[in-house]
Length: 314
Image (cartoon, rainbow, N blue to C red; front, side, top):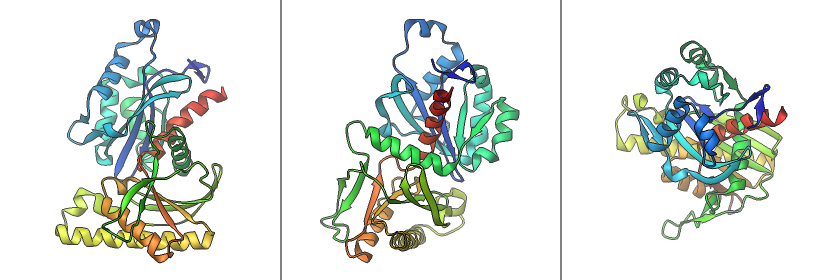
């Protein structure tokens, strides 16, 4: 085991991105546990690992995205699988309560978290579960997480893709894209809000602009309006607005590669194809819209990587 603050960095290893709508959690499941470690492992750690890896749903709202699991990774010198879990931010108190009930604080692990909720729920973590959050910069985590997942690939397949022939519905199809040399890129993060970043290297980026319109992802907001037609009209309006802003930013920054990420795109083929169409059509084929398989989880991955960075610094 590596050391953090002079102590063994114990499992479990988590990274959290606590957003305005969703909490994204990544969990590293070690697969190389020795017989000695197995014997020394405390019961509540075994319970946590079994609970997280044996279920695909947690309560009424928590989901493990099994199809996104990254297998046979080596992280911080250990071999294992990376799991991707999400639940609504409104269920955060139930998650904190579970941490208290499973005596999570006794494991002496470090909880790395990013997103606005890392500040919003910091006191609740401390008071209810006796846990200290190590809060991290949201944009740093996003970029580092994206670059890491793209570098390891998606279980032998490329992480990045685009839509070929986006202006022709009959010929439009998903194609892999090599992001080995990603700079410069315009990174459009679409969650409850939208941040647009110009990224020139892993350590050199700036936030160009941002926008809002993400509230249609909220169940409470959706219930206050009529259904199918208005929902689609709203979706198209949001997407076109984001696409036009992204195009203007790309032109202004002299960047021809635009990468769209964020949980707004999860199971949202309408918006992805609209963005691909808009980039291609309005730029006369000069701008390509790129997408990533783990679209909403990069901030959480970046938070986990920060845990390992803290380890290596000791």
